[in-house]
Image (tube, rainbow, N blue to C red; front, side):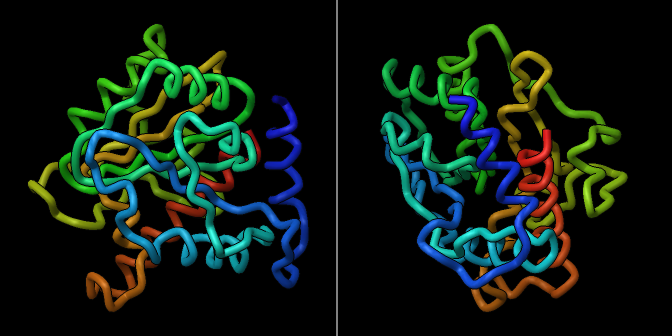
Length: 218
C-alpha cells in the first residue's frame, strides 16, 4: 500500500500538462447513513484546476466517486468527504478506510453544516486509539505555499463559531484533516453557487491547495 506515497509525490513534482487518462484524480467519498455526500458538485473540479495552476500538479479535474468499503479507494491518493447529515460506516467499511489511510492515503472531511456529531462517531470506528485533536496554528498544514497564520479561514458563518481544524495522526503522520465551522468546499464551488466574494473564494482555494500539497509531501 505504500504505492500511494509514490503516487502522491509524482502528482506534485510533475509539470503542468494536458489532462490524460493516466492523471491522478481527487476522490469524493460516498458513505451510508443518509447524509448528502454528493454536496458541492463543482468543488473538487475547481480545486483540482487551482492546484494545477498554483502548485504544478497534474490532477484530472474529473474527480472520482468512491465508496468507503470499495477496493477502488486505493486508486485515490487524496479523498474528500462532505455533507450535512448522518454518517454510518459498517465494520468492514471502517476497516477498509483505516487500511487505506495507514497505507498512505489522506482524507479531508469538511463539515458542510450538520454532520459533525455523526462523523466523530464514525471516525472512532476507524481509529479508536487515535482521537481527533485540534491542530495548532503553527502546524505545517497552515504554512505550505499559502500562509494561514490564524488557522483555517472562515468561509461561511454557520453558527458563527470560529473555524477549527482537527486531525488524526498515525505514527506521526497526519492521515485525516477535519475542517469544522469553516465550509471550505462551499468556497471551492463556482462563484454563482454561493455568491462568495473573490477574496473568500481565494482563501478557500488556497487553503485547499495547502491540504493537497501537505498530503502529497508529508
